[in-house]
Image 1 (cartoon, chains in turn cyan, purple):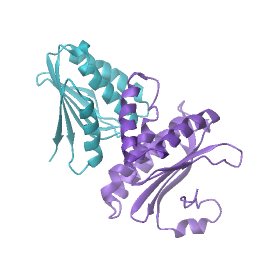
Image 2: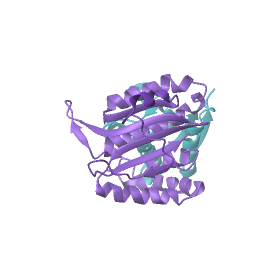
Image 3: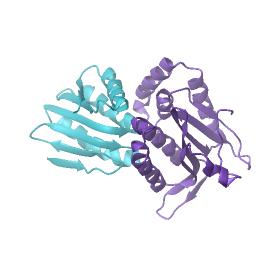
Image 4: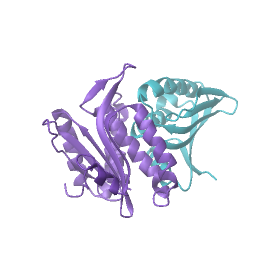
Length: 124
Length: 186
């Protein structure tokens, strides 16, 4: 398991499990400098996606701000692009059933996905 | 604007403490440390009070959007030691009947006024469904806009989460500086 970013109060933990073909993004995302935090992470995630034949991206975010919404959307769009067509990407959006906001945000992303599998996963 | 209960700090400090509705109030130069401090308060206090605990995630969300808007866009700023800067503004979280109100104020430039006025006019003339539709459209629009921190997306997000239509106005400070004031309810 490779830790691409450790959790802080404002930024999520991001891990890559190469054997399990899984990326996990968990925690919160409202960094002080959106691009300073996310740009190198996104570059690394795109590299992983381009070198894999399949990958599961799991989001377990309990809060992310509007700037981070754009970052997540950009990642989803990359996964759906022709450039990433060699990798079978699926996404799981985990949410606490009591957290209406995170559920709605997941539904927004799901509605935008047209080419990749996007599952809403309520947590216990 | 009549819906504002008013900032009670100026003038009568005793009156300020008479209100039990006010949960948090801060005015001054805001840094990320201040954002973090009040965020901790929201988590520790608002998340466990009977009147607010079920709403705390939404309160937290709107608080962060509003405070980050002050940090990014306030027109009155001072440099601080670590090479960054602090941004002048105010935030208030209070009880308003069954709802929780969240208000933010900060100085803006004339150029920011034009942009914000257009966004706020559009929001105030839109139905809930139209606000959600615009929010989703803006999610897509901002795909290629790498420089923007949100492109107005945050205001539409605040508007669609607010339990009743958001309120905003553009009063002038004593020095003639335009201010932007926005209020949402959860």
